[in-house]
Length: 158
Image 1: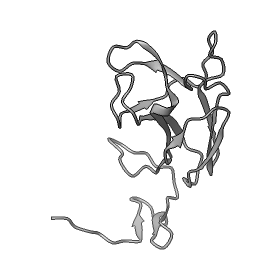
Image 2 (image 1 turned 180 degrees about the vertical axis):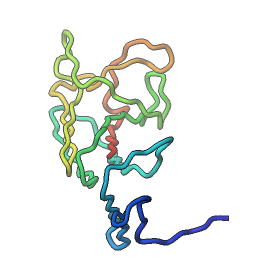
Image 3 (image 1 turned 180 degrees about the horizontal axis):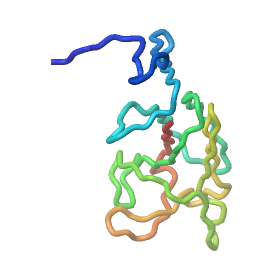
């Protein structure tokens, strides 16, 4: 059985005037003192997931996240759209490199930055053969991911 307790103020023990106020109209919680949590703290984390983004060279994509703050973490992923490199359609690969340069493949990869409203995703200028390098899923061999086999998505958390 689930019970619901409806309150708009919680009195802090050993205090005559300090209360935790809950404003149902705005969702704001006002806590007048520092709070220390013991044990496991759980709760909702606000997240953002972008739509799928086509991989292209020299592209700056602005993604409006509406998280209300600068995300403390934001990550780039590739989604396999055509089975390749040992990956199946739908597999998700976390992109760990931001820039890669070796003989004949300079300026590939992507870099991201963020503010309280947007995440900015910028890809390198040389996508010939593929924007991202990585490892095959089946045997760990090095591979340049062919752009047309993958799409990008960005996930963020506050």
